[in-house]
Amino acid sequence: MKILIRSVCLLAVAALLACSSPEADWNQATAQGTAAAYQDFLNKYPNNAHAAEARQRIQTIQDGQAWINAQTANSLDSYQQYIAAEPQGANVQEAHNRIMAIQSAAAWQDTKNAGTASALQAFLQKYPQGPEADQARAQLAQFDYQVQLGTYSSGQQADQARARLQDHYGKDLQAVVVVPPSGKSKVYHVASADMTQDQAKAACAMLRKSHQRCEVTKLAASEPRG
View 1 (cartoon, rainbow, N blue to C red):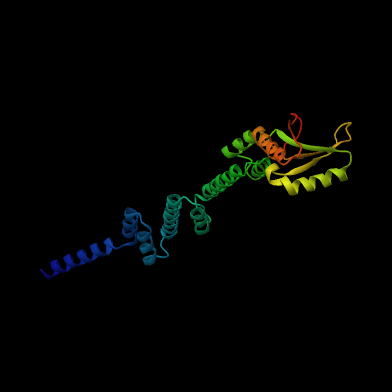
View 2: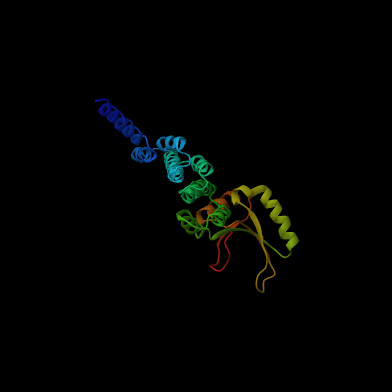
């Protein structure tokens, strides 16, 4: 009878040990599939054959949660924080892409508010690809007019006129520029920045109220914009 009782006790102890074996604990951690479960396994068996895999799974879980948090906030800061927290994360490139998209969208809004050829050109230099870039090119193509302000026989005269007109009408004309002679011409032109037709007409009308002579002209197709 004593032998039977001892045998039963030994079997119970063996079963208990089997239940808490490294392999059993690994299976349990895998079944739970949480970072906490894998960390508990590592705390108990830091040198186990499954330790490296446990660390990898913890990293994957943490990376996934960090990415979910970044997407939920969907902001410049949230994606930057993701990259800082998970520099080797699976979604780092996508985070960079989304940061670029957010910055591009904000810059495009500023560009539209500016409404000038120079702003469109600056935007395209920084963001040459993407849907906003296509819109910028389409809008820039409409800036094919100038307000002609005068012609001069020397560069010095043209520069002096440009400075005076810039001081008085620079805001209305967006900018005042000197166009040097081209081809056989020896004449310097002073004109506004490139504008849309509506902008040029409105600017010239404003100048005429101040008794400043001006003329709206369309740029030739071969002339550079800006």
